[in-house]
Length: 260
Image 1 (tube, rainbow, N blue to C red):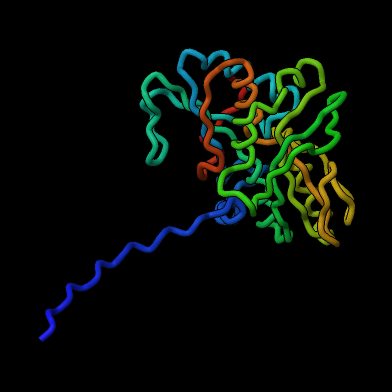
Image 2 (cartoon, rainbow, N blue to C red):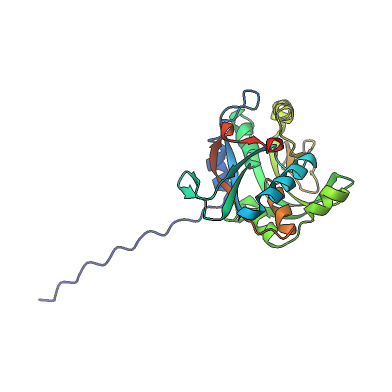
């Protein structure tokens, strides 16, 4: 008789890659934020800086909000050793939580507006007005947040933009179906009245926005990138590590940057 063979060891099933557009869809459907009532959950980005640079970071965040290149005035600071879910802030490090612009996509979805997040990129600004996207990374083509990639390339000039009104900032764009145009305008008005300053531009149906084409019967909505303040810190020589789309947070856990 032939000897019995040992059963083959079962190999673990490789984990499928998750592209950013899939992660956006996963998180956006869980957003419950109501800007008028100031309740519900938002998507947040988490950044870590050396503790000794916290005061400088707060000043930069205030400047970014006044310049209109942060998503909103809401922020949460974490102390060394403080926990956030399963994450613990390392020693001698401060954590900074800011609202991610993908929160807007969640609000649009909740209102039944067909949307398609397109991508994130670099936006050229002149006289404090956005002119065009100069670089773009599509969400469906990357497993890493596009703005994390671009910040690492040292391509921004956010500090110059805040001072002179001219430079390159981070932004992203999504397209919304034209039938939801009135609903989108109403939502953006509500957000603007409650501390959200990050709307760059809204396009017309079937017309490219800031150089980015949209599908037929759709119009574009461009926003500043949620990591602009962190990129400004990096430009000033402050070490910063950012993880975009970190998770969901109750808006009531965040405070107004002007109060710090």
